[in-house]
Image (cartoon, rainbow over all chains, first blue to last red):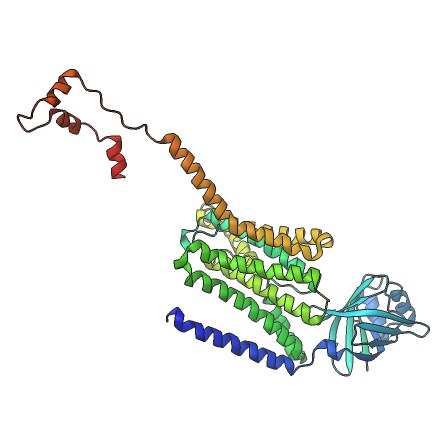
Length: 156
Length: 292
């Protein structure tokens, strides 16, 4: 087949692909829209543990004890937040039992990384493992004594 | 580096192209990961992500992954399309155009990132898409013109091939096989160049941020201009060398008085004695030149 006759085929294929992709994308809600709203913290869990003793301890009690959570939270800016309010303008209100904090949020990658930027320009990254209309799951790595990947679960 | 095609390429051609392009791919890959939290020079992992997201029912991410994989494919397609259809207009030009396109793509990413980027997800997706296309262009070009010998944007195949080759080298007959040794040299150099590029990007990223893409563009410019500079220098050297080695203008052959007299006499036998003598000897330098 000569190149001249190939051009229309190539252009048509590209156009069909682009239109199909745009059509499909317009029918799917993106994480930037889905995350907006109020989320209440439900649980902190460990998905991976370093020692069998930790595993047994966590098996006995599914969620992390408040003391452990507080200890972990010393290294995390959001530890005291129980309600997260994501606003469409890119701000996030963290409401704890005693404090209210406003920071900025962004999604990176293919929408699977949540970046939180504090006023002092400290940046935290969380893996947005699951995001549906009812549930949001964030993961973060902890290098503390209790090593593993912590999971934060939120509900609307 | 870009002049020759397929089997006409020498080991040195492939080594130069593979090393420099792998260094660039390593830089781009790490830069995209540090800035956008996604790799852009390899797509194998994205096929796994595609399947994982599909089972989870996250169709937005499924679409994104499909889009990026398609753009890598489209880059590779475009690159080889240009190479095979525009060779008649000049092989070097046909090989250089994909590199120039890649440079344009990465320059757009750098400029947009430095001056416009607001860190929205849509911007991130589009910039990553451009980078996937650029990496597809690069891989399509290097693999296409080297007869699939050089692949620079990922190391899965290289690691496998290197493993196989090193295991083969445990036998002497394979160690003495020049073709296999050359292949191992090429893969190993590509391997180390990719890692060096990645490390370099990791080191200079905190200072340069999006400026890292300008460094990549300079390196790509080097790939494009290498042949122009090389050929230019070669021509210059050849010209100078030819001038130095060129023979002195042919002087009038020295003839004895008797010969001169014989020449001035009218031909009696119809034969020129001087000519006869000259034709009996070895061919002159001029003749040799003419023959050549």
